[in-house]
Image 1 (cartoon, rainbow, N blue to C red):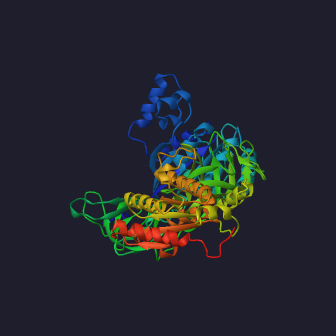
Image 2: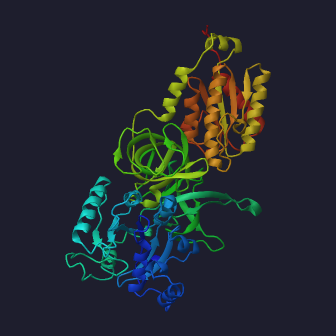
Image 3: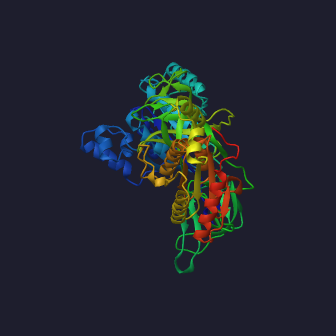
Length: 607
């Protein structure tokens, strides 16, 4: 029986505890562990005895602070996990660091939380990180939230102090559209309103912390949602007659069955699941969220890692090049418009630019700022991001796993965010804007295009030869170059790997590197075809977005596409389609004749 069908299992919930440093998060967790009887036998007495031996006053936080660095510094550096049980469910509690320097750790720990308790010190009041962490809860899409105003014993359990903090913090939460389920006055150290109602605050009639946790709604389990199966890699087998092609990855939500009709996004390609493969075991009939699996397809199609597999009969993710998102920036350098970064969502990795900053919450005051031109370190912002190629995604409320992303600057994760909605605009893309600016600023010589055509006795063009086999496309491209050269055409072969203009080093990411090479190739094609030449290039495993970029960058000159086999592209993107098993010499002659016809001068041509 599958684990998600086992009704006897107790319900579980991940809860993250956040708040400014020294506001009592670890003490709150330690007290919950003690009051619910969730500690190992003798653990409480052992910690108390250790404190007595070292002449230190006992703190409930010591139950959690197991790392020596944490105990010596008195702060939580990394996220710590612990477990306790109520009558209703089992809890996995994540204690997140409060120091601003460790916000990356906090976000990592909170990323899979279903609920949050945000702690505010009644004596110190609302601090910078109290607000910043509140924003992080919104940022991560966490809806089950309780605010605990801790250390009420220090302020004499005064209702006025609690109400002042409650009023001020609710005003901030309204700004970021976050509504907590409970606002609870507590003293974690003394146990007030932790596991039961406190007699010291008769003016408070609401839930205790434990009751608030039990009141949180459990999300729909991942396996019951729509299928989202990001592709990590495609494995091809060739030895001993094995011709399998297995599409592998980790299922983030939903279930997949043999026989399911599936859709790959953003490519829009369709197929059906022939079998579900598992490492070192027999084939399966189904796989579900949380499992890593591989699938074989009935109809062979060309896809790349990064595609998301969906079930055709279920709700589909969005596909767009623009998203509206909330981001939190942690990079040492600011997040600026116009510069290219890397966006990673699920297994997708694409170049991205900051297109528009809608608003920024100031890092220190967290007040809203409009018309800001960059996002500085520790700022949170609502913005529009534009990717170089379409991506598949969900809004974070629907499916969080495909609604969160990170932004990489060079080799560092410098920002993270959640997707609020797709942006479908008919206006200009960043690529088209770049091309208009490039062409406007282009300094032209006195030699006209017509004069160049007259000299070369043919029109310029970019010839793209593509197919699954890199060796084959390169071989054919070089042979076509030789044929045209012997016929006195001005022709030049350039392979993608020869591109050297762009200085970014993405050698550790082949997918990302190839996108930049395609961009380079388009720029080189624009220069060489503008000089009147026929440029030939071979690009294996190209897709329609690559071709559209090449054509856009090469305009107004022609781009001709020759493809071997139908596995890659639909015929509407191909000018000449050749069979994979056709002899090389025959293919070469057909391509050469095709290029000569496409670049032939019109009979009435004149300068």
